[in-house]
Length: 397
Image (tube, rainbow, N blue to C red; front, side, top):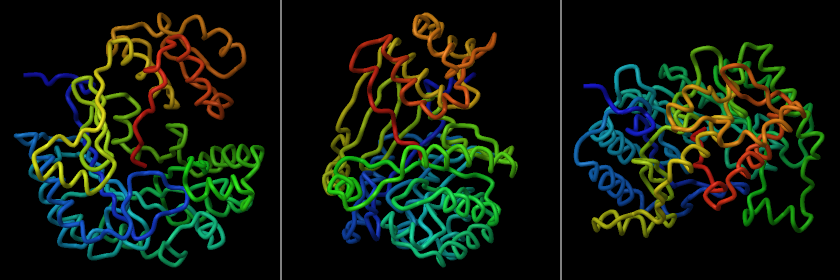
């Protein structure tokens, strides 16, 4: 019997572990610092939430993010991995990723992860330079990075490195050195993000009070453009606005998101997209633990998307891919021809050289990649409803 398509039946699962040794100044994710005593109960709660599936659900991709999942003690981490193996067994050839910071990725933990079927680690390096790590309020030191990469390599993992450009005080030369260092370590996948100042975070407050000088827009653009060219020269293709990989090394889990396929989400603050419902869990860790262990719903927000809502969201996420939106698969997935949704807004964007169209697809041009959020927002104006401006789920890398 054929399975339902991937946009209906989840093939991917995300699990959130909120614990961190340090809360970085730019981070606005659901994290818990200084609450390590909650870790055993939190793992119990995650297992209880997974058990509500009632039967094991085989997955093509799994991603444990955070927070810092590898901050969990070995015993708790192995207990979580065992439960995932039961409730979310990985299909043959599947991808199982774990997010980590350099200071907490040690050889012993990598061996345990390998035994449990983990295939890939995403390491939050952010920068290889001490002055930029300090500017970003990171906890790890430069010397932690080669140890973490070595542990991942020795365990036989694929590894991805996360890098942030346009940190306070960063120059284009700093960015060039970070990219060269990542390539020297043999990374087959890089996620590169311009620093964003999320409202309420310490870095946002420092910027508002004039305590730091953000990078200029010209420098940020120059860094982004440089990354595209430098990484292409090194054999890493840009396959999404912020992600680069050698052939065969893309993050398959994030590709589920960018296709707008269904996925499970477990843990505090986690999002999920199942049966055309978008749901968010509560963001407070003690509340999540209490509710999950009491058998109560841990869902904070839920919304059933209309077919038109789903079509617009599919357009918004698929346009992030360098390949863009393929017309026939889009219509098969959503029931809508793309031009029936946004046709009246396309000519101006095509004329400005921000979008390009072939007989079979629509995609951002290189110039359009710089303005992707604004272009998507412009296209969504074809549907002037609050749902069209709904925040999209956090990506894993």
